[in-house]
Length: 151
Image (cartoon, rainbow, N blue to C red; front, top):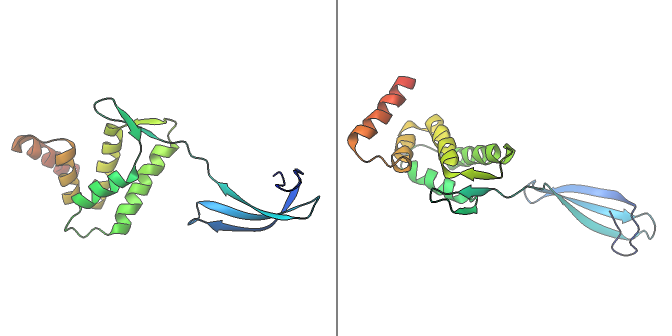
């Protein structure tokens, strides 16, 4: 790390501590040449995820959209916000760990339905009915039958 005062390239770390809820590390450093102290921040570099929508347009990934749809699906159910947060964190981690920087809404929807199926079956059916755009009772019943068969 280059010293901001004398531009010397060697420094030693005096103190390190997590900041920003563990998303970065604050390091207090001392230059080995001029002995002045300075602070650096180390963060994990993440590449932005781009979502390809059904109309083929693209937009940045927004985890809040998933959280809001989970909240709607889980309304009046015994699902805690912590469970929703964990599910959305898992979905986001799966997407970040894939090698793809662009992901379709279909992929995100399938991941979301898998998580909701594990959390609450009623919330899953609510989400699936909107996501898969059930047009009639027959389609809805087919999904329920598939869910019952998997039990």
